[in-house]
Length: 270
Length: 180
Image 1: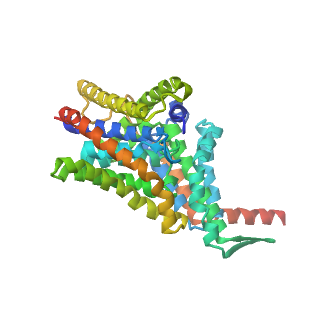
Image 2: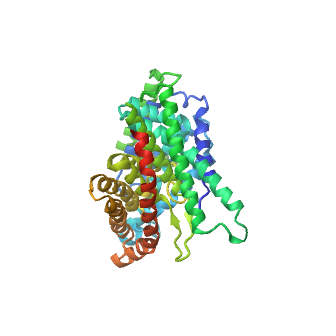
Image 3: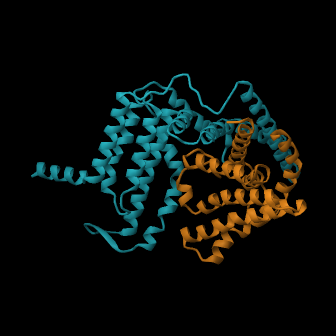
């Protein structure tokens, strides 16, 4: 069983990374959200056998990680944790598509292997971009950006509340689990009844908390509007970031940059 | 946002958080190798207690945060790849389960049969989407997909469905009172 404490601790670490004040962190959340979505859409728009065209897109996460002072090892670890699922999505391709597509000297690569590699590259690029967005923006600001961009208020509020409750209930559940395991000498306390009591406890505590949270929000005059101390404002730097990157993504999508670079290197070697 | 809507938003978010926490809580069963994972129980409860609309909102928001990468799925993982992998159908089945359970719990007239029918059909929705998806992604035969992706979980599901009905009956008056 996955450890609830370490998993949520991991998420909160990702959120604490967003408190830095680098040039990337200071950008407007809406701009980062739009640029990330555009990046993901562009990466996913490639054909299923495309590999070379995807390589230049590595520049986006690399630049953002460097400028945003984000820990690359941590982000890679997070990507690796989710990688088995992408692996399962693509691993059947080599079995279904056996036609040889690429000849590398004596090595023949079938279309299935090429499409599998393409899926894995896309997965790494898109997941890394999403992680960078959270690590440089924070979950609260992403929710706020969603609301300002026209997402329903109740959705944004629900996302914010869920993010908060995940930690609260995670704590509650891990306290219950820890208390039970501390009392399970000689396999006692592993009975079904103990677990049903635990679930009942968790449910009652949750409902009690729901009541208290609601009353606290009403007392503070919450009306569904998410307010922040620093108002959101899109400046020239933000627009430059979005237009610059979007332009580059379009360029990399439309023109075979790796082929050009390969041609230039070949020319130089001649 | 009026008072009642805010209260429902709070409940839906808490239910979603419970579904997420349920992914971490496993109960070993005296029979069979498959432990009970409590996610389905909370999905059923979301439908029974909040109704079709808010139950669906609760599961939808849970799936959304899972899709963007928060570790809320079984095994403490998250990400869009889950929806495309072998378990993607079960995840979408959760949404269908909350919707159907909530709809039946709201609309059936017979109070004694209402919750039972709602959880049975709701639980069925998970497999109705999960098993064909598993077959499609892995290329298994129907028999094998049902054998791997449904049959071992049925005893656990029966326990969870019973627990959901009993818990809903005990808690519903409290929730209704708070929502009034």
